[in-house]
Length: 479
Ligand code: FAD
Ligand code: AMP
Image (cartoon, rainbow, N blue to C red; front, side, top):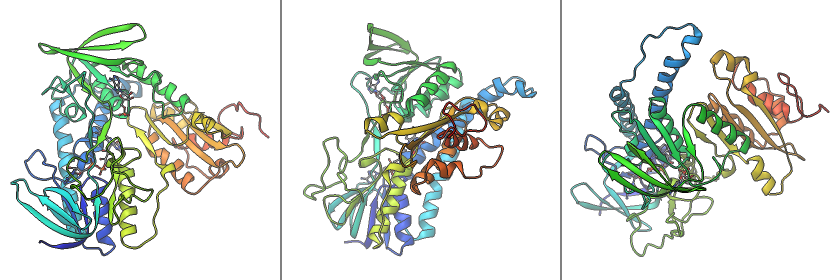
C-alpha cells in the first residue's frame, strides 16, 4: 500500500485541479490523478478546458477575429493594413504554445500548493481507496479519507456521421485543421458549433450549420437569440434550423451529408465536417465494481446539491455530474467540495452560473429568460438597451447587439441578464454579482458606471426596466 491522503482527486481539469489546490490550501494532504497524454507524449494537466476546449478555441477565435478586423474594419478607421493574409499553421502554433504554457502552469501550481501529482488512470476501488495505473500498466493503490471524481466529459458522436481521420471530426479535430476548408459543414448550432463555425467562416470557409431543432439558441432570451441569428447570418454563416442529419458518405476527398428538413430529404457536400452535437460524461472505468456510486440514466454520476455521491466521502464534480458543462461551474464545485471536506459550510448558487458564446459579438447570459419566467408563472418587467445608442460602442466599431435585464415585476429582483454585444462575456459578471447579492434592477440603475464603457448599456437596460433610460426613447412611460 502506498501513501495515504486526506483527499485524492481523480482528473485535473478545471474541476479537479481547482479542487486539489483548494484542498491543499486548507491544509489537507492532497493528491490529484491525471491520465491525459499531451502532444509531447507526457501527462498534462488542465483537462478538456486547457487542452482541447475553452483556451485553444478562444486562441483561434481571437486570431480569426483580428484577421477579419484587419481585413475589413481598419480601413474605416483610416488604417491601411495592406494585403492581409492568414498563416493558419502559425495561428495553430500560437494556440499550441498557449496550451503548453497553461497546462505546464498547473504542474507549477500543484508544486507551489503542495499537491501531489499522480500520473496514470485513477479508479475508485472503495470509498477509501484509489488505484492508479500508469502508462506502462503498473498499478499502485492509495488510501484516502475523501475522494473527488472530476473525470469530465467527451464529445458525443452520432451514428449518421462516424468520425474519420480528417474529413469528419469532432471539436478536438476542428482545433487542429492546418488549412482553411473551402466548404465546411458543422452539425449542431450549440455553443461549440457556433464558435468553431465562426473561426473557419472568418478565415474564408463557406460554413453551413445543420441544426435539428427549429429554435435557435433556445436557452438564450428569444430577443437576444433572434438578434444573434441575424448577426451571424450577416457574417456569412448559413444556419439551417430544423435540419436533422441522417447520414453521410465519404466520396473521395468530399463528405456528402444527408439531412431531413421540412421539405424532405436533402443532400449537401462539404470538404470537411465538424460534429458538435454535445458532450457526454466520461465515467467509463472510473468507479470500480461494487463501490456503490450511482450513475443516472444518462451516465452522469448522481450527486446532491453539494456534489456528494451516494457513497459518503466520495464526491463528484464538473462535467461528469448534472448541470451545465462549463469550466467555471466545474471549478466552483471543486472549491465547494474542498471546503466541505475541510469542515467548512459551503454551497453553490446554481441559478447564477453565466454562459458565454465567444462569437463576434459575444452572447452572454445568466439566470432566466423572459420566456422561462413566463413558463414558471412569474410576472416580469424587462429593460433593454441597444449598443447602437452607445458612444463607446460607436468608438469601438461594435454597435451591434443589445443588453437586456429581466426583473421580477413585484419585487424588482433581477432574475436574468442576457447580452449580445462586444465583450458581453466580461459584462455578464455584473448580472452574476447582482444576482448573487439579490440586487434589484433599481440597484443597478442607481450605480455609477464609468463613461464611456460598453457596460453603460447594462446600466441603461436596468434604467429602462422602469422606463427611465436616458440615452434612448423609453417604450414604457416614466412613473
Ligand atoms: P475535464 O476538463 O474534461 O477534465 C477531466 C480530466 O479528468 C481530464 O483531464 C481527463 O483526462 C481526466 N480523467 C478522466 N478520467 C480519469 C481517470 N480515470 N484517471 C485520471 N484522470 C482521468 N467551458 C467554458 O466554461 N467556457 C468555454 O469557453 C468553453 N469552451 C469550450 C470549447 C470546446 C471546444 C470544448 C470541447 C469545451 C468547452 N468548454 C467551455 C467546456 C469545458 O471545457 C468543460 O466544461 C470543462 O473542461 C469541464 O471540466 P472538468 O474538470 O469537469 O472536466
Ligand atoms: P450543445 O448541446 O449546446 O453542444 O449543442 C448541440 C446541438 O446539436 C443541439 O442543438 C442539438 O439539437 C444538435 N444536434 C444533435 N443531433 C443532431 C443531428 N443529428 N442533426 C443536427 N443537429 C443535431
